[in-house]
Image 1 (tube, rainbow over the protein chains, first blue to last red):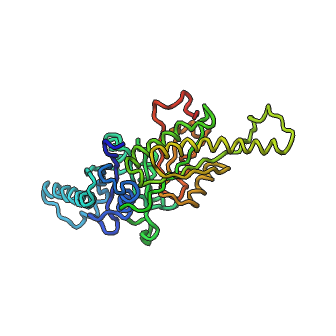
Image 2: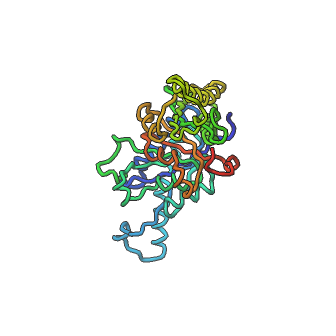
Image 3: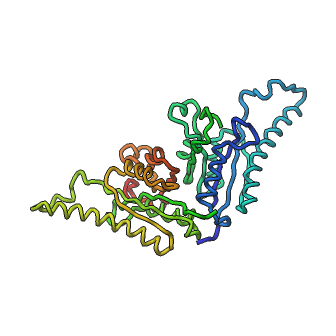
Length: 175
Length: 175
């Protein structure tokens, strides 16, 4: 029954509390859950595909106190964003390496929901795992949930993993 | 990383085309997908929990040409329903036995969506697998989909497996 490993795509994001390069509680939880409940000891049977979507900073708040004197300054800014995204992916790739599970990781830029669905179409994983903050219907209206959109629109089976109750920050919208 | 097996609950139903005791295309597909993509060769790492919900026949069409002469006739009717449900479960339990995966199977009566969510609460599986006919939004309004309700309301991670395109009957509402 073995053969090609089962390809699990995992969409990961950064912690909104600690910022880059720390993974969000829900990304970490989704990853650890998948290891514990699906991969288990069968490390050669699975391959992780980690995708992180860099969201263009519409507000530009981070750049408010910076001085831009040349086109190169903007280039550096973009490089910094990429570097942060890479550090985030490094966390997951390092964990896989320690455990001995195959993986690939890559960055994309854009709207997370759209990009995740497009990447599913392109890469055709066996299934997609997304972490979820488990927000109630009221909070959802204002925050939007990537997990719900993907579960509905991604062209592969999707499994949504909620944060554990004891890991939820004071404001559930965080992280 | 082993220890207690991962408990996968699978809600199964009968084929609407062939009737009892044949499993629906989507139940069979959800089961085979889980074996192939999740269980793989790690048969000792997982346990299936099969639930079939018997839906009380509101129309009683099946009984239109029957003659009821005593209370026992009604009792027999109920026994027949249970027997059919058991034959459906037998299909899945036999497959598990052949492959060497542990399993349990049981019947409940009621509204499938409600009963599945209640049983998830009671049994606390690691995750729930539901098959889906993959109906479009128009057909869904009239038919309702158990899978969507469960994905939203079940208190555990849910993975929805659609039928393969080449297995879809002429009328997608069927089976």
